[in-house]
Length: 377
Image (tube, rainbow, N blue to C red; front, top):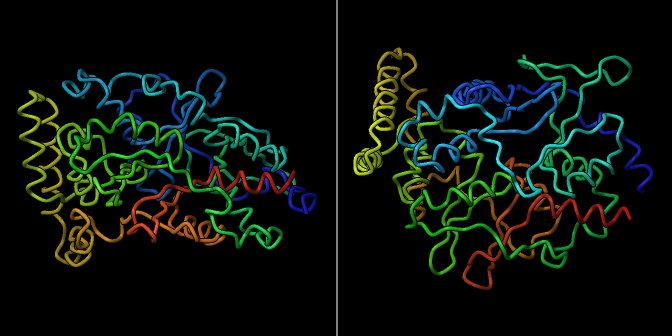
């Protein structure tokens, strides 16, 4: 089994992948934020590579990194324009061995890639090869970069495609396989969103999210890097002023947040003396209003669908499309893999049906991959 499954090279998993967009360490943080908006509009993964001397990949950053950067330093919140003028290198903080980017040779084996991920690499940078039977095309108009990303999701999908070879574990429950981690990142809905910034940083590094859990242990939402990526740098004002519950509503309705949320943000900024951030928010609000007003009547229906989002009941005003992905301890390994891949997340929350559906833990792609690695020993 191992011989046939691991005969492929890393490059086989990269066929058709576009070259990543990249920026040098000296680029301004504001330039990074603008690049991330362009990447998000293109439909690609909202992350940009940061390169150092000799175009060596030194990190991968997304909008959540920018928001954490702005919210960690009070001076950055007070003068956001000055903070965004700082170099991207200011965003690359030590991650204690987790969340690092590693470069791997395209001729490396799948096993080598798997071991790199399980030893702490968040993502692998694979140089694109041209010519031969594995010609790699750097599509997507990447600004630079002669490499692509190989992620945990790519590896999980690879093993799912060969799940028949792992029939003896595929149908076993995640609980019996020991995959339910009972230690996870969490906050209460009423806590200040600003207090969650260190947890968001950790979620970025571990490819997970911060669970929003009530006092009695029920999951009511999450704050994830992927959801924050749907915003822009002005979301730092929401993190600095709102509660966790209100931040979830702000993120879900980004672009047209409820009026009471906007009032709370502006009042909070005034109370904290963050006048520069307040001006940035007001300028953005006027810009959004102008854009909506100038839209033609023929696009009214489409615009309405994009702006009017019906909240689900009992979930702090969140819309059902953004509900966290959950399973039970009895869910099979293959079911959890399919569920996570279908929702493009690298983790699934576990709710205990025998305990009033309270949050019991989390299953991560890293742990799922560890199961397959053990089967290949």
